[in-house]
Length: 173
Image (cartoon, rainbow, N blue to C red; front, side, top):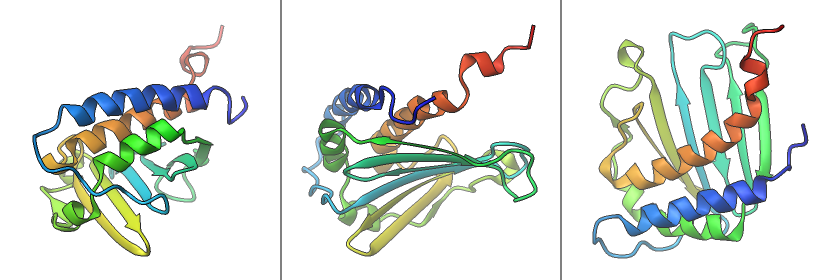
């Protein structure tokens, strides 16, 4: 399967979802735009897991990359990477959803990520060499990150479907 097949359309569709999400936010002041040189990251992990237990999504102005992997080099599953282009519409929407100044004021950890194997998620923003990562319990982002996490998960969902197509999930025969 080619790595670029149809991803511009997928990311455009995700971009439309993100526009709707950003318009439904609170009536807060507009965010300063994420610069074109910025990088957004999202990831999840589950500690008591065998197989593909970690995911890392990286989004830049030009590219989206998703890596799924196990915990250890001895895991029976090889890391899988999928890369595709970022559309202008999707990048512009993400830019409007992110303010480094707002994220840098957040705590580094919320709740008890991956306690009792509930999983952990994180969002990271890198702008001009300054980086901020916020880690939280899986499915429970801080209020300030809810729309952004929802949008980044939508991108992840589209990309992960290419890793595990339906025909790979059906029994042989």
